[in-house]
Length: 296
Image (cartoon, rainbow, N blue to C red; front, side, top):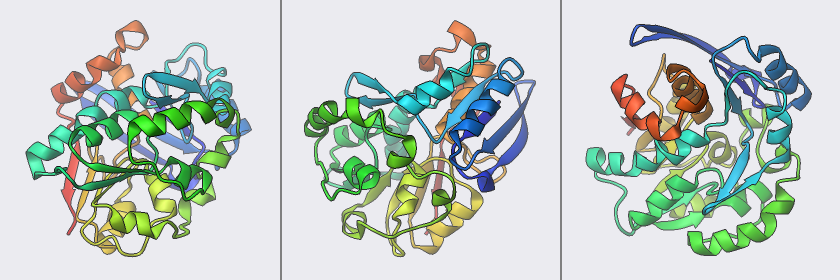
């Protein structure tokens, strides 16, 4: 399984693992935001690996029951004709949807009335829904983190109406306009600290939340993905209490949703059999549960 990412090559990694008698080789290649390089890598790997993951860009953004195709995601997907290509949405809509209940059973949160900052509901709609259903008061940060606009939303219903009005246009923009790529993933520009400090729970893609991460995260609970050992240590140093990811820790690293989905697709044999509704059961069968780690 190979993840081709628009993120920094400094986060590249390779790991081998054996699951149910199958040897898994998992690789991640970052292209530093270079879409042409990512397109060539995908084209070169097509037909030569069991599954491909697409990192740093989604194929679609989701607002409620509607999906909106991202121009850059579609361009990259067009390079692949034979190998199954996934962007992690199948994991986000199934495995991550169950995360809130798992955390409640194991750690006693999220609780009614807690404030949850979700950095991008469009990227993780099912997780946002689960937090809202758990009684959390949401701060929906898509306009903050993607557009730099100090306009938070506090309900998925209101946000969905606004998103549907603007998404047809926003999905045509270069992905680098909406999401930190390349070296930007290795830098931090603290901002919107007021919203971080109001939150009990901070949820969403790690690169999104890290880009504006404040120095003080005392008592905060983090639900995220694509976390390295260094990232976990940094969160601990800043005082975060809990770290949760949908993927287990493999050699100190919790892979992103696209990698986890690519693994599921490969184990299911690819093609029509790789139905996302089968992912939770498959991961449970092979003993790959979520990562729930007390940091402080």
